[in-house]
Structure formats: C-alpha cells, structure tokens
Image (cartoon, rainbow, N blue to C red; front, side):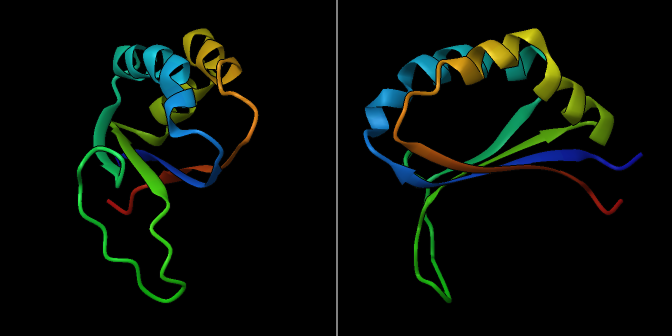
Length: 101
C-alpha cells in the first residue's frame, strides 16, 4: 500500500510566532492519526537549498502509512480544531499526495 503525505508550504507568514496555537493542537492531532513529521524547514533549524525561484518558504512534510489515513487525519475533528487556530495573515499551500510505492 502506498504511503500518504501532507505537504504544506507557507508563502506568507505575518508572524511566525503566531503559529504557536496551531502547532500546539496540530502536533498531537497528527501524531494521534499516525502521522510522522519528516521535515519542518527552515524554521526548526533544518537546512534548505532553494533553486529556481530561490525562495526558502517554511515547508512541512508529514508521512502517513496510507493515502486514506492522510485524508482521514486532515478531516479529523482534532485537526479541524487546529486549523481553526491558524491566525489571520498566513497563506498556506496544503496538499495530500499519494506515494509511488
């Protein structure tokens, strides 16, 4: 069964500290749904080399055991509560993708 991934990119963040309430709720919601954080860059000390457009936006990559599990995690009540905590001033490009194998 192919894995599922959440891929989030934040092209606009008015105040990175404003994500604290979201992070506090989202982390446990994702973990409870079986998600594993693979990358959170560059805000947590990870390195980024940005090519083409050259913009190193905050990027989050979370892995789930299946695509269906990733979708269910997003739709869960706990994660929807986290989404409600995202403050104004944030632009987020979020997608759920299925792995290739």
